[in-house]
Length: 191
Image 1 (cartoon, helix red, strand yellow):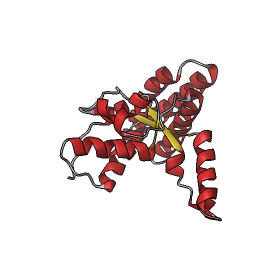
Image 2 (cartoon, helix red, strand yellow):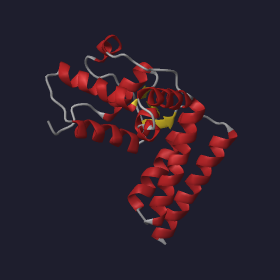
Image 3 (tube, one colour):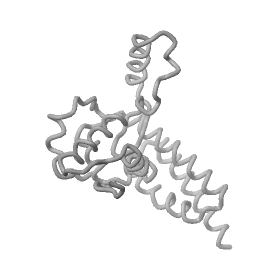
Image 4 (cartoon, one colour):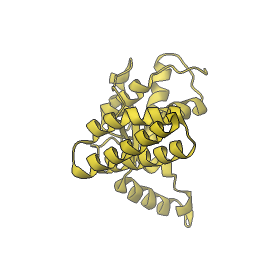
């Protein structure tokens, strides 16, 4: 199957059901939901769906120190010298993002019984830091490339990010500064 059978907000809903998930566990959840619908999914399609959810800020990826410690411990147990084989994607926590309207897809209520979940509470500080850093990188790239469409998109979601991240001075100032940079770049393109 090549078309998407689950929406990006439903992907965020799956993550929200557990608090957070690793990339691999979210992939397994999508496989389970597809199976319950009689659909076969290709790994590339699932990875593309997850990547799109992250790209559109529907899902946020942030590093988890606990996951890094587990990956290092498991790596040391598996084979000597395998620390270079640690999968960085597996060490990231995924949480519902600032542009998501988390929605549970059909059969999602079965997932907690099916998956050996690694769900945990969201580390809002780490997630917020990851979102603001990602916004900064995306804004820099959009401005450097004079990508009006991306600048406009990022400008719009700065409000979502600000609401989602809360109003601590660091968050508010960082997002407001990035909004100003994006707005200035957009204004310059139209002058």
